Length: 241
Image (tube, rainbow, N blue to C red; front, side, top):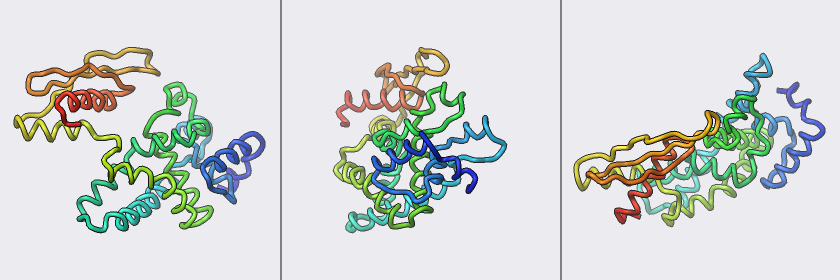
């Protein structure tokens, strides 16, 4: 990691300094922050060594989970363990983390391989969420738990508030399925109706059938996103949201 740290100079150093100012923390070792932005697709294409952010992501996931769990324990003192677990799963979900990463401008700093870059990797939810966790892990190694905790709470407290106030982005597929199973003893049936766009920038269109009624189609950058969107349409039509 020391050799990798030495490469953070010039324009890249200025970029990282700008990012940490925006994010509200300070690294002693900018090499750790730089490493947090390196996706495995880059190291696979450019080096023989396994230089990427996966180990930092593993560490950051644990730190994030601990900080959020402790916060929920404090602010949901009258709620059972099941409610804490459900809230935590939403707060630290891929969708939430990727949106935070977008909000603080992380796509501009990601280092990806050419193939991943061409396929829109800078805006893929999984890559963004993993990179955010890697940044948290890097901050923990660089500056300790308190610094990492301060950053995590700064970005996660607003999300916790949204969830507790029921104003967060909902898991419409689960909401729809629970309603349909309860009311008609069946399940929603999703159908991919078409794909549009080039291979590196596809759009998927999906419908959902609920008790004989078809809703949609709605679109998304992948099937999962399209299914969530059409499930949201069905939920609104059924008066569930």
